[in-house]
Every structure is written in C-alpha cells, then in structure tokens.
Length: 623
Image (cartoon, rainbow, N blue to C red; front, side, top):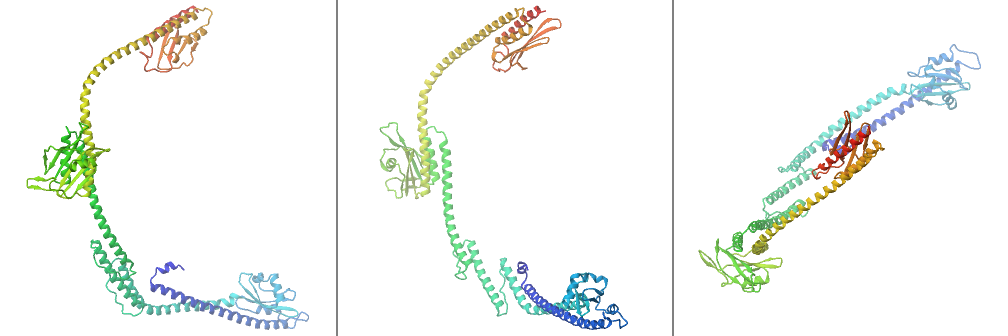
C-alpha cells in the first residue's frame, strides 16, 4: 500500500479506508473458512457416496460374470457398466488383476489411464487422483476381488463446480453487506469528529496564510476541545507577536513585548532581531555619518586638486586661492598661509603670503622665525597642533559686527618627503572635528607639493631665462655645423657614387673584353661561346650576385644559374639577317627598390648593346 498517498487523504477518508480494509479482510477470512469447509464437506460426501456405489457395483459385476463358470444372467459386465452414470462425465470400468481391460472407459478418457495410472490402481486398491487430461482432476475409486478390479471414475469439476459457484455468491454477498453496514456505522460515528476537525483545519489553514481567524468555539471537553483551545492561544500569541513585528518594522525598538514562554522560539527570535536591528540602526547611522564625512573629504580633495593644477603667476596668487577655498570649505572664520622663505639659506623665516577672513582677503605683512610663537613651534615640530582654548591675547577675529576671540585654533605643517614648506593657521568659533583635521592634513600634503612645484617652476623660469641666451647662441652654431655636415655628407655620397660607377665601368670593360676574346676564337662552337658569355657578362651589372643571363639563337638556348622570368629584365634583340635573329636577356632575381636610378643603369643598357654587337659579329662569322 502506498502510505504516502494515504497520508494525503482526509482523516475521515483515511479512517474509512482502514476500516473498510479491516472489514474486507475479516470477511475474506470468513469466506475462505466457509469455502474450504464447504469444499472439504463436499469432497467427503462425494467420496462416501461413490464408495457405497462402488460396493454395490462390485457385487453386481461379481454376480453377472464369473471367470470360471458359465454365464448365469442375461447381461454382460460391459452392458451393466455402460448403464451406470456418475455425475455429468463419470463412468465405471472393469479390469482383471493383471491390468487387462474387461470393460473399457469411453475413448475420450483413455489418456487418463496410462501404464503408470494402471499400476497405481492395481497396487493401491483405493482412491487415487489423476490430473493428466483435458477434463481436469479425475478421482478414481476401485475395489479388488480375486478375479477382477471394479472401478468408478468421476471428475472434480462435475461434483464441485456447482457448489463452488454458490459458495462464491454467498461470499460476495457477505463481504458487500458487511462493508455497507460498517460504512453506515462509520458515518454516524465520524460525522461529529470530522466536522470539528474540518473547522479546525480551515482556521489553521487561514492562519498558515497569515490571516488571523476569529476565536474558534467548539463545545467539547475531549481532545478536540483541547486542540481548539490550544489553537486559540496560538492565535492570540501570534497577534501579539505580529503587532510587535509591525512596531519593529516602523522603527519603534522600545515597544514592550513579552514572549509566550521561555521556550517561545519566535518571540525570543524577534527580541534578538529587535536588538540586532537597533544596533544595526545605530551602526548604520554611524556609517552614514562616516560615509558623508568621507564623501565630503573626497569631494574637497578633488576640488583642491583642480585648484592646485592651475597655473599661477606667483606664489601669492596660489596662496590666496588655497586659503580662500579652505576657509569656505571648512566653514570657518579666518585663516592664514605661511610659506618658508629660503632665498637666504642661513636665515630662513616664515612669511605670510595669504590671509582670508569673513569672505575678504586681508593684506598682512608678517614674518615669523622658526620656533617663534605657535606657528614657529609647529614649523619646528612638524606636527599638527589643535588648540581648543585660545589665549585672549593671541588672535582676535574682526568683522563688521565687531571683534571676538576664536574658540579653536588649528595649525598644520606643509610637509612633503620629509621637507617642510610652510604652515597653515586656521581659526574658528567651533571646535574642529577630527574628520576636518584629517582632511586639512591630507590637503596640506597636496599644498606642499603645489608650493614645491611653484618654487621649482620659479627657479626653473629664472634658470630658463639665463639659458635662453646661451641656447640662442648654440642654435646659431648648431645651424652652421649642420650646414657644414650636410655639405660634407653630400660630397661623400657623390664620391661613393662615382667610385661605384667607376668600378662598374671597369667590370663592364673587362666583360666586353672577355666576350670579344671568346668570340675571336674561330674554333669554338656557338653553344660553348654562349655558355661562356652568359657566365661572364653578368659581372658588368651593379648587383652581380643577383644577376642572371640568357642567350637564345635558333634552337640554342643558354641560361646562367638562377635565371627566371621577373619584372626586372633587360633584353636586346640581335638581327643577323632578315628573319634570322638572336636575343640576349639579363634579369635581377631580386628587386632593389633603393637601387641607384634602377632597376638598370644607363651604363648597363650600353653594356648589353655592346655585347650584342660583338655576338652579332661572331654569329655572322659562323655563317
């Protein structure tokens, strides 16, 4: 049985199915008991009846036939046995004690009486069951006398099947009736229980969907009433818990709430959640403030970077822009920028280059020696100084509304790579918060870098002005040297070209001489002459290692090593007579884009013409 499927059914249906199964099982057991009892009784009655008939039949056969006497009645044993009828298909038979047939059974039942079956009938002389046949089980009853064996054979289906059908009908009627009776009883017993359980299930289902149902009223004092009371307590507790969760969602972390018990998992979890959310809210507010401070500092650093990247005429303009932006961005009242004056390395001092207060530039000339006052001390110590109680006589902030002593004073050294360039002094009626102090310290490094660059640029401009005169003189000298160098280089290139051309002319003259020498030999054959000429004539070209030649005359074709068809080819046709000519071809197997007036020089063109004239004379002499 699929118990998973059974678990998905309603309680009433589950109980009904289980009871129906139990009733059905009980009725089946009773029916099987009735069936086997009735079958056993039927078999017993049949066996007793056949045994009595067999006894009578045996006496009748013994009277009607005697193997040692004459016949003394009118009917033979075969006729007596043939008249007997046992159920629908039963029959009687007669054999001697040796197993020979005296009265045979009908032919259609002959397969039931094999040699083995006959041996059993003779030896056992009792009831045997034979199953080898198309009519089913055959019951054989036999009795033996001194001279013969009388037997009756009946088939089980003839005496049992009618009774079995009636038995089946009674079983079906009994099972059906039992199921109907128990179903009716089950309906009246389970109806009140399932009605209340269905109501409970409906309300609990609403509760599972997040809907708080009304109070469940079930007037029972049993377990179902206890369940209803527990569900009502659960609903009331969940209402309180939901209200508490809603207040938490609104941010009311001080809302009073008491868990249902010490083991109330949901209630205790909500209390823990409230504390975590409260802590998270505090942390979030703190992080938000920190994030705002970081964004404020990041934006300020970016704006100061834009200011410091600009070009200024002098340090005073740079200082004014710096202190003006710093006062406004920090939302304070007054500030000054002191820069180290190191023109005299032995007597350095701090010089105020910019002062700004109440949106106005102040022109104050002030010089402070290292170690003098708070600014001088900050210069020597190279550490930020934050004074939260300023002495009355130190500084007074003056505006159109009068004078007042500042509450807080901040001094930050301008240090870059262990070198100090000045001090920033800021005064405010408010205490400087830490994030603003950190911001000023970060900006101070950038300001120090800008002042360093400004000083370096000033020195560079001075040196540049001094070197400009020298540079102009050097430029004039360089122009003269460059002109002389170009003239020298042109002269060298021309000399190299003339030298190369001269060497080429020498090679060409030598090549023509060698060709003439070959052609002056009257005993040499045309092919041999062409082979020698093709080898030596390429020596007169500017790229000898990449040159190849071919000479064609009638059926004679001679090529030097590496000859191929290329775009860089020079040819000359030699007309010997009308319709009779020769051809000389010279190629470069590699192209030289930078070749001098390439691909072929005028001297090379003249060379091939001269060689063609020599070959023409040679060929005319051979005719």
